Image (cartoon, rainbow, N blue to C red; front, side):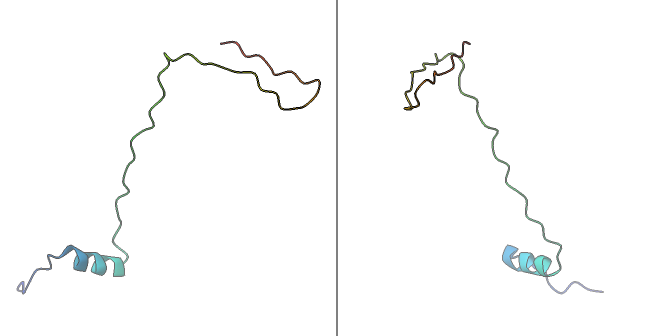
Length: 61
């Protein structure tokens, strides 16, 4: 058996392998999420939502 030619174009190779259900694309990995810096102070302002008799809970950190 002799090699007659090579297929070297990516688009043609992709079409052939897709037709044969052999082609699998690599998933691009996203960078992990970056946590916000912990050195920033958290400022909370009271909010009046209009409900009578309701007090906002106070969270202390």
